Image 1 (cartoon, rainbow, N blue to C red):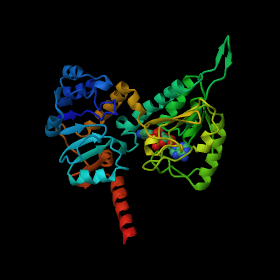
Image 2: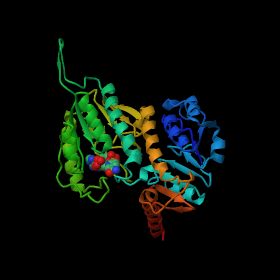
Image 3: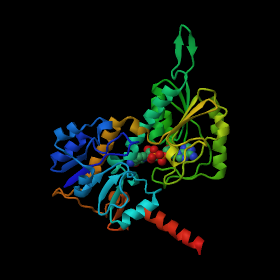
Image 4: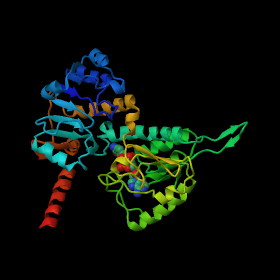
Length: 382
Ligand code: NAD
C-alpha cells in the first residue's frame, strides 16, 4: 500500500504527516511517497523523510500512484480528480458543492472534522489537538500584540496591574487560552453556554460569568447549541459589562456546523481602551465580533482585531506532529492485517468521518444536510 503526502496550499505551514510519524508506517511495511518540500515549513525536511525510508516524488506521480492521499486542505487539489482516497479536514458541513463533486467523481473522502467526539475517537481528534495549539498561540499572540504587561509588575518605576483577559467560549481552544493567559499572569474572565465548562474554568483559576437560561446541550455530543433571543440579549449585556474592563479578548465560540455567534458588537469594542487586543479564533465561520475579518488584522478605534482560525499553523512543527499522530491512529482503522486499504462502514467512527465513497454521500449528518437543503430549495422554487 502506498500513502502519499501532498504539499499544502501556500497559506498553510503544517504538513499532514511529518517524517517521524511517517517512519512508524514504513516500519509496518507501508510505502510512503512525499511531494518535494511538503514538510519544509513544518521543519520536516526531504532528507528526514528519506532517512525514514520514504521516497520523494512529483505531485502528479503521487496523484497517479498512491492508494491514499494525505492533504490537510483540499483547496489546491484539482476538482476533477476521480477514484482517489483523501484524508484531511475539508469542512463538508459548509462545502456542499465540493461534496457532491467528490461523490460524482467516485472519490473516497475522509474529513477528520466529522469524527464523533467519543472516547474511542479521542486519539484521532484533530480538532482538539489543533484547537489546543490555537488556544495557546492565541494567548501568546495577544500578549505579544498588547501594548502593556500581562503579569502584575512591581518595579522601581512603580507597579503595573495585571492584564484583564476575557475569553468567550471555553472549549478546547478557550480553555488552553485561559490556562496560558493565567500562566502569563493575567486575570481571566470566561463565558460559555455549556454548564459543564464552569468547573473546568474555575479549576484554571479564572472567573466564570454565569448567564441564566442557556439552552439544553446535553444531547449535542459535547457541542454548544443555538440560544434563544432572550438568552442572547442577557449574555450580550453581561459581555458588554466585562468587555469595558478587558484589555484582551480571545473569542473561540462555535456552534457545530453553523455560523459563529456574534457576541461582540462594534459598540462594545468602542468601550475598550486604546491599545487593547481581540483575537478571534472563530473568524473562518464569520467571527465572534462584528468587525472580524478572516486571516486579517485590523485596527479600529485603537483596538487591534486579529481574525485567525488557523493559528495552529503558527506552530507548525508541533501542530504537524500532533496532527500526524491523530492520523496514525485513524489510519490504523483503514489498514487491514494484510497491510491493504479496507473500509468498514459499519464502524461509527469511519461512518461519521467518511464523507463520500462509491459515488455516494456516506456521513449521515452531511447526507441530511445536503439532501435536506435540496428538498428545502425545491419546495421554495415550486
Ligand atoms: P467548539 O469549538 O465547538 O466551541 C467552542 C466553545 O464555544 C464551546 O465550549 C461552546 O460551548 C462555546 N460556545 C458556543 N456558543 C457560545 C456562546 N453563544 N457563548 C459562549 N460560548 C459559546 O468546542 P470544542 O472546543 O470543539 O469543544 C466542545 C466540547 O466538546 C468541550 O466540552 C470538549 O471538552 C468536548 N470534547 C470532547 C471530546 C471527546 O469526548 N472525545 C473531544 C473533543 C472535545
